[in-house]
Length: 432
Figure (cartoon, one colour):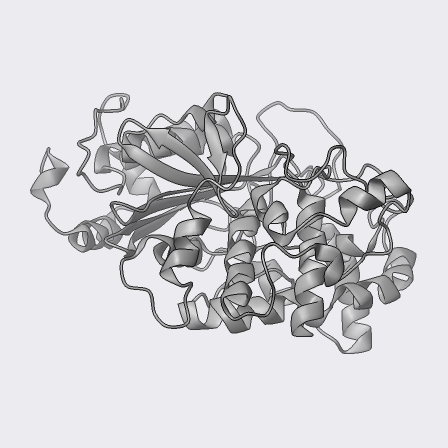
Protein backbone atom coordinates (compact mmCIF):
# COMPACT_ATOMS: atom_id res chain seq x y z
CA UNK A 1 0.00 0.00 0.00
CA UNK A 2 1.55 3.38 -0.94
CA UNK A 3 2.60 5.48 2.01
CA UNK A 4 1.45 8.67 0.31
CA UNK A 5 -2.26 8.52 -0.60
CA UNK A 6 -1.65 10.96 -3.44
CA UNK A 7 0.11 8.07 -5.20
CA UNK A 8 -3.35 6.51 -5.66
CA UNK A 9 -4.83 8.61 -8.47
CA UNK A 10 -8.38 7.28 -8.47
CA UNK A 11 -10.70 7.33 -5.42
CA UNK A 12 -12.65 4.41 -6.87
CA UNK A 13 -9.49 2.27 -6.83
CA UNK A 14 -9.14 2.94 -3.14
CA UNK A 15 -12.76 2.00 -2.52
CA UNK A 16 -12.29 -1.34 -4.30
CA UNK A 17 -9.04 -2.01 -2.45
CA UNK A 18 -10.45 -1.34 0.99
CA UNK A 19 -13.74 -3.05 0.26
CA UNK A 20 -12.17 -6.22 -1.06
CA UNK A 21 -10.71 -7.74 2.06
CA UNK A 22 -10.31 -5.25 4.89
CA UNK A 23 -13.38 -5.62 7.07
CA UNK A 24 -13.62 -4.14 10.53
CA UNK A 25 -11.97 -7.14 12.15
CA UNK A 26 -9.09 -7.15 9.70
CA UNK A 27 -8.48 -3.46 10.20
CA UNK A 28 -8.52 -3.88 13.94
CA UNK A 29 -5.91 -6.60 13.67
CA UNK A 30 -3.47 -4.60 11.55
CA UNK A 31 -0.24 -3.88 13.43
CA UNK A 32 0.89 -0.33 13.98
CA UNK A 33 1.08 2.54 16.39
CA UNK A 34 -1.59 4.97 17.52
CA UNK A 35 -2.67 7.04 14.53
CA UNK A 36 -2.01 10.79 14.50
CA UNK A 37 -3.64 13.31 12.19
CA UNK A 38 -1.31 14.42 9.40
CA UNK A 39 -1.34 17.77 7.69
CA UNK A 40 -3.62 17.32 4.71
CA UNK A 41 -2.79 18.79 1.34
CA UNK A 42 -5.53 21.19 0.26
CA UNK A 43 -6.03 19.21 -2.95
CA UNK A 44 -6.07 15.77 -1.30
CA UNK A 45 -9.39 13.96 -1.45
CA UNK A 46 -11.52 13.53 1.68
CA UNK A 47 -11.49 9.72 1.74
CA UNK A 48 -10.10 8.65 5.12
CA UNK A 49 -6.63 7.15 4.87
CA UNK A 50 -6.02 3.42 5.35
CA UNK A 51 -3.99 4.27 8.45
CA UNK A 52 -6.88 6.14 10.01
CA UNK A 53 -9.35 3.41 9.14
CA UNK A 54 -7.05 0.82 10.66
CA UNK A 55 -7.18 2.73 13.94
CA UNK A 56 -10.89 3.53 13.81
CA UNK A 57 -12.06 0.42 15.74
CA UNK A 58 -9.82 1.41 18.63
CA UNK A 59 -11.31 4.89 18.68
CA UNK A 60 -14.85 3.52 18.50
CA UNK A 61 -14.21 1.24 21.46
CA UNK A 62 -12.62 4.02 23.53
CA UNK A 63 -15.50 6.42 22.89
CA UNK A 64 -18.26 3.83 23.21
CA UNK A 65 -19.57 4.18 19.64
CA UNK A 66 -20.84 0.77 18.44
CA UNK A 67 -21.55 1.79 14.84
CA UNK A 68 -20.57 4.43 12.30
CA UNK A 69 -21.13 5.05 8.61
CA UNK A 70 -18.96 7.33 6.48
CA UNK A 71 -19.49 8.45 2.88
CA UNK A 72 -17.45 10.84 0.73
CA UNK A 73 -18.30 12.89 -2.35
CA UNK A 74 -15.47 13.77 -4.73
CA UNK A 75 -15.80 15.61 -8.05
CA UNK A 76 -19.50 16.01 -7.33
CA UNK A 77 -20.34 12.31 -7.01
CA UNK A 78 -20.42 9.58 -4.40
CA UNK A 79 -16.87 8.25 -4.44
CA UNK A 80 -16.47 6.09 -1.32
CA UNK A 81 -18.45 4.74 1.62
CA UNK A 82 -17.93 2.32 4.49
CA UNK A 83 -19.76 1.04 7.53
CA UNK A 84 -18.07 -0.06 10.74
CA UNK A 85 -19.22 -1.80 13.88
CA UNK A 86 -22.74 -2.86 14.82
CA UNK A 87 -26.28 -1.49 14.78
CA UNK A 88 -27.04 -2.68 18.33
CA UNK A 89 -24.35 -3.39 20.92
CA UNK A 90 -26.11 -6.45 22.33
CA UNK A 91 -27.51 -7.93 19.14
CA UNK A 92 -24.25 -7.41 17.21
CA UNK A 93 -25.91 -6.92 13.83
CA UNK A 94 -23.20 -5.39 11.61
CA UNK A 95 -23.47 -1.98 10.00
CA UNK A 96 -23.67 -2.44 6.22
CA UNK A 97 -24.41 -0.36 3.14
CA UNK A 98 -28.11 -1.02 3.81
CA UNK A 99 -28.08 0.28 7.40
CA UNK A 100 -30.41 3.20 8.11
CA UNK A 101 -29.19 5.92 10.44
CA UNK A 102 -31.38 8.37 12.32
CA UNK A 103 -29.71 11.54 11.08
CA UNK A 104 -31.66 13.90 13.36
CA UNK A 105 -31.23 17.57 12.38
CA UNK A 106 -29.53 16.66 9.13
CA UNK A 107 -33.21 16.36 8.17
CA UNK A 108 -33.40 20.15 7.96
CA UNK A 109 -31.14 20.84 4.95
CA UNK A 110 -32.85 18.07 2.96
CA UNK A 111 -36.27 19.55 3.71
CA UNK A 112 -34.94 23.03 2.92
CA UNK A 113 -33.86 21.78 -0.52
CA UNK A 114 -37.41 20.57 -1.26
CA UNK A 115 -38.87 23.86 -0.02
CA UNK A 116 -36.59 25.72 -2.41
CA UNK A 117 -37.65 23.41 -5.23
CA UNK A 118 -41.23 24.50 -4.57
CA UNK A 119 -40.08 28.12 -4.57
CA UNK A 120 -38.34 27.60 -7.92
CA UNK A 121 -41.63 26.25 -9.27
CA UNK A 122 -43.56 29.26 -7.99
CA UNK A 123 -45.62 27.18 -5.56
CA UNK A 124 -44.53 29.22 -2.54
CA UNK A 125 -42.58 32.43 -1.95
CA UNK A 126 -39.62 32.74 0.39
CA UNK A 127 -40.61 36.17 1.68
CA UNK A 128 -44.30 35.49 2.13
CA UNK A 129 -45.58 35.03 5.71
CA UNK A 130 -46.27 31.47 6.81
CA UNK A 131 -49.75 32.45 7.99
CA UNK A 132 -50.68 33.17 4.38
CA UNK A 133 -50.42 29.41 3.80
CA UNK A 134 -51.21 27.82 7.16
CA UNK A 135 -52.01 29.11 10.66
CA UNK A 136 -51.54 26.31 13.23
CA UNK A 137 -54.11 26.15 15.99
CA UNK A 138 -51.44 26.21 18.69
CA UNK A 139 -50.09 29.70 17.87
CA UNK A 140 -50.22 32.27 20.66
CA UNK A 141 -53.27 34.46 20.11
CA UNK A 142 -52.12 37.48 22.11
CA UNK A 143 -51.86 40.75 20.15
CA UNK A 144 -48.11 41.22 20.68
CA UNK A 145 -47.27 37.64 19.76
CA UNK A 146 -49.69 37.67 16.83
CA UNK A 147 -47.96 40.63 15.22
CA UNK A 148 -44.64 38.83 15.26
CA UNK A 149 -46.13 35.48 14.25
CA UNK A 150 -47.87 37.09 11.28
CA UNK A 151 -44.52 38.43 10.06
CA UNK A 152 -42.56 35.15 10.06
CA UNK A 153 -41.63 34.14 6.50
CA UNK A 154 -40.46 30.97 4.80
CA UNK A 155 -36.99 32.51 4.58
CA UNK A 156 -37.01 33.16 8.33
CA UNK A 157 -37.57 29.46 8.99
CA UNK A 158 -34.75 28.32 6.70
CA UNK A 159 -32.25 30.80 8.17
CA UNK A 160 -33.47 30.35 11.79
CA UNK A 161 -34.55 33.94 12.29
CA UNK A 162 -38.17 33.28 13.38
CA UNK A 163 -37.56 34.04 17.06
CA UNK A 164 -39.34 30.78 17.92
CA UNK A 165 -37.98 28.27 20.45
CA UNK A 166 -36.33 25.05 19.38
CA UNK A 167 -39.13 22.99 20.97
CA UNK A 168 -41.86 23.83 23.46
CA UNK A 169 -41.51 22.07 26.80
CA UNK A 170 -45.21 21.17 26.89
CA UNK A 171 -46.56 21.28 23.33
CA UNK A 172 -49.91 19.78 24.30
CA UNK A 173 -50.72 22.74 26.56
CA UNK A 174 -48.29 25.54 25.70
CA UNK A 175 -48.92 28.04 22.90
CA UNK A 176 -46.17 28.78 20.40
CA UNK A 177 -44.82 32.32 20.52
CA UNK A 178 -41.60 34.03 19.38
CA UNK A 179 -39.23 35.57 21.91
CA UNK A 180 -38.19 38.40 19.57
CA UNK A 181 -39.36 39.95 16.32
CA UNK A 182 -38.54 37.77 13.30
CA UNK A 183 -35.51 38.70 11.25
CA UNK A 184 -33.63 40.31 14.15
CA UNK A 185 -31.49 37.47 15.49
CA UNK A 186 -30.79 33.74 15.08
CA UNK A 187 -32.81 31.31 17.22
CA UNK A 188 -32.41 27.68 16.18
CA UNK A 189 -35.94 26.28 15.94
CA UNK A 190 -37.31 22.84 15.17
CA UNK A 191 -40.82 24.13 15.86
CA UNK A 192 -40.45 26.54 12.94
CA UNK A 193 -39.66 23.66 10.60
CA UNK A 194 -42.78 21.78 11.72
CA UNK A 195 -44.84 24.89 10.93
CA UNK A 196 -43.20 25.14 7.50
CA UNK A 197 -43.92 21.44 7.00
CA UNK A 198 -47.60 22.25 7.49
CA UNK A 199 -47.22 24.99 4.88
CA UNK A 200 -45.79 22.46 2.43
CA UNK A 201 -48.64 20.07 3.18
CA UNK A 202 -51.13 22.87 2.43
CA UNK A 203 -49.39 23.79 -0.82
CA UNK A 204 -48.90 20.26 -2.18
CA UNK A 205 -51.84 18.40 -0.64
CA UNK A 206 -49.37 15.62 0.20
CA UNK A 207 -47.65 14.27 3.28
CA UNK A 208 -44.08 15.33 3.93
CA UNK A 209 -42.66 12.01 2.80
CA UNK A 210 -44.78 11.92 -0.36
CA UNK A 211 -43.48 15.36 -1.34
CA UNK A 212 -39.86 14.49 -0.63
CA UNK A 213 -40.12 11.21 -2.54
CA UNK A 214 -41.57 13.03 -5.55
CA UNK A 215 -39.35 16.10 -5.63
CA UNK A 216 -36.03 14.79 -4.35
CA UNK A 217 -35.58 11.19 -3.27
CA UNK A 218 -36.80 9.50 -6.47
CA UNK A 219 -34.99 11.72 -9.01
CA UNK A 220 -31.78 11.75 -6.92
CA UNK A 221 -31.73 7.96 -6.58
CA UNK A 222 -32.11 8.20 -2.78
CA UNK A 223 -33.98 4.90 -2.54
CA UNK A 224 -33.12 4.35 1.12
CA UNK A 225 -34.41 7.64 2.51
CA UNK A 226 -37.65 8.42 4.35
CA UNK A 227 -38.93 10.78 7.00
CA UNK A 228 -41.49 8.18 8.03
CA UNK A 229 -41.41 4.66 9.47
CA UNK A 230 -42.37 1.09 8.66
CA UNK A 231 -41.62 -2.40 9.93
CA UNK A 232 -39.06 -2.86 7.17
CA UNK A 233 -37.29 0.35 8.16
CA UNK A 234 -37.27 -0.73 11.79
CA UNK A 235 -35.26 -3.83 10.92
CA UNK A 236 -32.60 -1.80 9.14
CA UNK A 237 -32.36 1.11 11.62
CA UNK A 238 -29.62 1.51 14.20
CA UNK A 239 -30.29 1.76 17.94
CA UNK A 240 -28.84 4.61 19.97
CA UNK A 241 -26.40 4.06 22.83
CA UNK A 242 -25.35 6.05 25.88
CA UNK A 243 -21.79 7.10 26.57
CA UNK A 244 -19.72 4.49 28.44
CA UNK A 245 -20.68 4.27 32.12
CA UNK A 246 -23.47 6.82 31.70
CA UNK A 247 -26.47 6.15 33.91
CA UNK A 248 -30.07 6.65 32.91
CA UNK A 249 -33.48 5.02 32.58
CA UNK A 250 -33.62 1.84 30.53
CA UNK A 251 -36.55 0.85 28.37
CA UNK A 252 -36.19 -2.88 28.97
CA UNK A 253 -34.49 -3.52 25.66
CA UNK A 254 -31.34 -5.10 27.04
CA UNK A 255 -30.56 -2.06 29.15
CA UNK A 256 -30.65 0.27 26.14
CA UNK A 257 -31.70 3.89 26.67
CA UNK A 258 -35.13 5.07 25.49
CA UNK A 259 -35.13 5.25 21.70
CA UNK A 260 -37.63 8.11 21.44
CA UNK A 261 -38.73 8.17 17.78
CA UNK A 262 -38.56 4.39 17.44
CA UNK A 263 -40.91 3.96 20.39
CA UNK A 264 -43.31 6.70 19.26
CA UNK A 265 -43.37 5.29 15.73
CA UNK A 266 -43.99 1.76 17.02
CA UNK A 267 -47.14 2.93 18.80
CA UNK A 268 -48.27 4.89 15.75
CA UNK A 269 -47.56 1.94 13.46
CA UNK A 270 -50.17 -0.16 15.26
CA UNK A 271 -52.83 2.47 14.46
CA UNK A 272 -51.57 2.88 10.90
CA UNK A 273 -51.94 -0.86 10.39
CA UNK A 274 -55.44 -0.73 11.85
CA UNK A 275 -56.54 2.12 9.57
CA UNK A 276 -54.75 0.84 6.48
CA UNK A 277 -52.95 4.14 5.87
CA UNK A 278 -49.14 3.95 6.01
CA UNK A 279 -47.33 6.41 8.25
CA UNK A 280 -45.57 7.83 5.19
CA UNK A 281 -48.97 9.12 3.99
CA UNK A 282 -49.98 10.83 7.25
CA UNK A 283 -50.36 14.59 7.23
CA UNK A 284 -50.58 16.70 10.36
CA UNK A 285 -54.37 16.54 10.31
CA UNK A 286 -54.21 12.72 10.22
CA UNK A 287 -51.83 12.62 13.16
CA UNK A 288 -54.05 15.01 15.12
CA UNK A 289 -57.16 12.94 14.40
CA UNK A 290 -55.51 9.65 15.36
CA UNK A 291 -53.54 10.99 18.32
CA UNK A 292 -56.03 9.78 20.98
CA UNK A 293 -55.90 6.24 19.59
CA UNK A 294 -52.09 6.23 19.69
CA UNK A 295 -52.02 7.67 23.21
CA UNK A 296 -54.41 4.95 24.36
CA UNK A 297 -51.88 2.21 23.54
CA UNK A 298 -48.61 4.10 24.15
CA UNK A 299 -46.81 4.29 27.51
CA UNK A 300 -47.87 7.38 29.50
CA UNK A 301 -46.02 10.50 28.44
CA UNK A 302 -44.49 9.01 25.29
CA UNK A 303 -46.78 10.81 22.82
CA UNK A 304 -47.78 14.37 23.66
CA UNK A 305 -48.87 16.05 20.42
CA UNK A 306 -49.40 15.16 16.75
CA UNK A 307 -45.82 15.95 15.72
CA UNK A 308 -44.62 13.10 17.96
CA UNK A 309 -46.16 10.57 15.56
CA UNK A 310 -45.76 12.47 12.30
CA UNK A 311 -42.88 12.48 9.85
CA UNK A 312 -40.91 15.45 11.10
CA UNK A 313 -39.12 17.85 8.74
CA UNK A 314 -36.77 18.92 11.53
CA UNK A 315 -35.61 15.57 12.85
CA UNK A 316 -37.01 12.26 11.55
CA UNK A 317 -35.09 11.53 8.33
CA UNK A 318 -33.64 8.01 8.18
CA UNK A 319 -31.29 7.04 5.40
CA UNK A 320 -28.06 5.31 4.53
CA UNK A 321 -24.91 7.42 4.55
CA UNK A 322 -24.66 6.75 0.82
CA UNK A 323 -28.06 8.37 0.25
CA UNK A 324 -27.14 11.43 2.28
CA UNK A 325 -23.94 11.68 0.27
CA UNK A 326 -26.06 11.62 -2.90
CA UNK A 327 -27.90 14.62 -1.49
CA UNK A 328 -24.58 16.32 -0.72
CA UNK A 329 -23.54 15.67 -4.32
CA UNK A 330 -26.50 17.78 -5.43
CA UNK A 331 -25.18 20.61 -3.28
CA UNK A 332 -21.67 20.61 -4.75
CA UNK A 333 -21.67 19.25 -8.30
CA UNK A 334 -21.12 21.53 -11.27
CA UNK A 335 -23.94 20.65 -13.69
CA UNK A 336 -27.38 20.43 -12.07
CA UNK A 337 -30.12 18.54 -13.90
CA UNK A 338 -33.36 20.24 -14.86
CA UNK A 339 -35.22 18.91 -11.81
CA UNK A 340 -32.61 20.23 -9.36
CA UNK A 341 -32.42 23.69 -7.84
CA UNK A 342 -31.71 26.56 -10.18
CA UNK A 343 -28.06 27.65 -9.89
CA UNK A 344 -29.07 30.98 -8.35
CA UNK A 345 -31.26 29.22 -5.78
CA UNK A 346 -28.49 26.82 -4.78
CA UNK A 347 -26.12 29.78 -4.49
CA UNK A 348 -28.58 31.49 -2.15
CA UNK A 349 -28.86 28.31 -0.08
CA UNK A 350 -25.11 28.50 0.53
CA UNK A 351 -24.89 32.28 1.02
CA UNK A 352 -25.29 34.40 4.16
CA UNK A 353 -28.95 35.19 4.61
CA UNK A 354 -28.89 37.39 7.70
CA UNK A 355 -26.30 39.80 9.03
CA UNK A 356 -25.87 39.39 12.78
CA UNK A 357 -22.79 41.30 14.02
CA UNK A 358 -20.12 39.37 15.89
CA UNK A 359 -20.92 35.90 14.58
CA UNK A 360 -18.10 33.58 13.50
CA UNK A 361 -20.52 31.46 11.50
CA UNK A 362 -23.34 32.44 9.16
CA UNK A 363 -26.73 31.03 8.23
CA UNK A 364 -27.62 30.10 4.70
CA UNK A 365 -30.95 28.52 3.82
CA UNK A 366 -30.88 25.27 5.77
CA UNK A 367 -27.09 25.28 6.19
CA UNK A 368 -24.46 26.72 8.53
CA UNK A 369 -21.56 28.48 6.83
CA UNK A 370 -17.99 28.81 8.12
CA UNK A 371 -14.97 30.55 6.64
CA UNK A 372 -11.81 28.45 6.99
CA UNK A 373 -8.17 29.01 5.95
CA UNK A 374 -8.96 26.79 2.95
CA UNK A 375 -12.06 28.67 1.93
CA UNK A 376 -15.76 28.60 2.84
CA UNK A 377 -17.55 25.39 3.78
CA UNK A 378 -21.13 24.54 4.69
CA UNK A 379 -22.16 22.06 7.37
CA UNK A 380 -24.86 20.78 9.70
CA UNK A 381 -24.86 18.52 12.74
CA UNK A 382 -27.58 16.27 14.08
CA UNK A 383 -28.45 14.92 17.53
CA UNK A 384 -31.61 13.03 18.49
CA UNK A 385 -32.20 12.05 22.10
CA UNK A 386 -28.50 12.57 22.78
CA UNK A 387 -27.82 9.08 21.37
CA UNK A 388 -27.80 9.57 17.59
CA UNK A 389 -25.09 11.91 16.29
CA UNK A 390 -24.45 12.84 12.65
CA UNK A 391 -22.51 15.44 10.68
CA UNK A 392 -22.33 16.60 7.06
CA UNK A 393 -19.73 18.96 5.58
CA UNK A 394 -19.41 20.31 2.06
CA UNK A 395 -16.94 22.34 -0.01
CA UNK A 396 -18.68 23.81 -3.05
CA UNK A 397 -15.54 25.15 -4.71
CA UNK A 398 -13.87 21.73 -4.71
CA UNK A 399 -17.09 19.74 -5.29
CA UNK A 400 -16.55 17.51 -2.27
CA UNK A 401 -18.37 16.51 0.88
CA UNK A 402 -18.27 14.06 3.76
CA UNK A 403 -21.12 12.51 5.77
CA UNK A 404 -20.75 10.69 9.09
CA UNK A 405 -23.55 9.04 11.07
CA UNK A 406 -23.24 7.25 14.41
CA UNK A 407 -25.44 5.50 16.95
CA UNK A 408 -24.02 6.77 20.24
CA UNK A 409 -23.89 9.73 22.60
CA UNK A 410 -20.17 10.17 21.94
CA UNK A 411 -20.66 10.02 18.20
CA UNK A 412 -19.95 13.73 17.96
CA UNK A 413 -16.48 13.18 19.46
CA UNK A 414 -15.81 10.49 16.89
CA UNK A 415 -17.14 12.35 13.86
CA UNK A 416 -14.94 15.33 14.74
CA UNK A 417 -11.92 13.03 14.63
CA UNK A 418 -13.02 11.66 11.28
CA UNK A 419 -13.53 15.14 9.80
CA UNK A 420 -10.18 16.43 11.05
CA UNK A 421 -8.34 13.38 9.74
CA UNK A 422 -10.10 13.20 6.37
CA UNK A 423 -10.28 16.88 5.49
CA UNK A 424 -7.51 18.58 7.44
CA UNK A 425 -10.08 21.10 8.65
CA UNK A 426 -10.44 21.96 12.33
CA UNK A 427 -13.80 23.72 12.37
CA UNK A 428 -14.69 26.30 14.96
CA UNK A 429 -18.08 24.61 14.94
CA UNK A 430 -16.49 21.75 16.86
CA UNK A 431 -15.39 23.88 19.82
CA UNK A 432 -17.60 26.98 20.07
